[in-house]
Image (cartoon, rainbow over all chains, first blue to last red; front, side, top):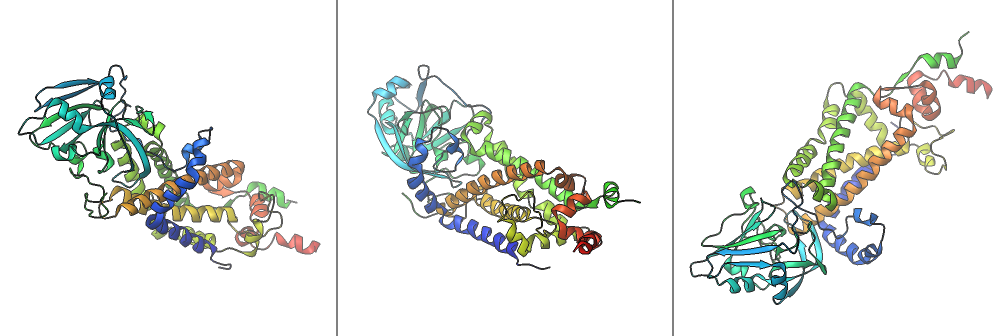
Length: 232
Length: 222
């Protein structure tokens, strides 16, 4: 047939762009967010929300979006503790706040750069309840009725593990796991359980929702799920 | 005496055969499923509305794995000769194809001697062909992420997102142009077009199908 094979060139060009994007897309995304992000923040139409720049994906494993009013919210802390606690949203707000700004990394790949969080250290909550000897781990459950997670006691006492109530300067919305969620900075997103309902201190690690579906229990970013590189 | 127009009114010209149409419409349905489940997985408000992430993820994954199948099966099948031939047509660009982009009113190609596909259709088909492979590769990295470094996973997500945006625009554009040109659409639904459409919109293809006869009138006038 006559004519130049433009179709093949365009086809291969697109495949090349896709491959380059896999290799360097993480940098391109960071660049886009720094350059274009500030303008998008000023866009009043909301249309820019469709652009894939600097966004959280909203993960919910159940059929409806869980909701609890801040006034009615209670965080229960039980299990192997000296004094079981029932903390209100106001109780948590009254404790010493801690802010953290970190990249949020999902195990499947999406990443949001420099996300500011605010909450109280999980270790402070544990101290208030008094962890008993023989305790080894924590089991977290969500009021979505399905999700659960775990941490070892040592992980839980890190300074970058928060019981969080603010994201990007705003109170946590339902979609982001409000009123209160966990934020485990050094681990993949699935450890940061949303709609936090109960913390149970246990004598061993109980695998959570995604662990039963094949994910690692210790979810260090870059050092788990078959990888061993750039740990934070 | 029968005029040329009378003859044209009663006959039609076959454009896409059964194999091509079956491949097109199964791919279209899969694209529809992928775009809708993809929107639920990607866009916060939809995710919030529907939840059930695991279910949508599974449907999206299986539909995605199936996506290349219809066209590939049609290409290798014994009855896929016309599709294989059309693939060659989509690849090759003539001088008039290049001129088409300079036209202000591309819907009326006028004296441009276009073949079976206009350049827009060629780009559209090429884009979808490449996009299917890119989405399959990046989607697989996102779904079976374990062997890949975090930067690759993030890069694959980045590519998947932007190509998805491109696919949405291309699909909406594709449907818009199909609705604007009902005869062209009929080529993909019933499989045939009117000779008038073929003669005015795709003259080079028309001559190829019916022979050079109609051109003789033009020739005598000259």
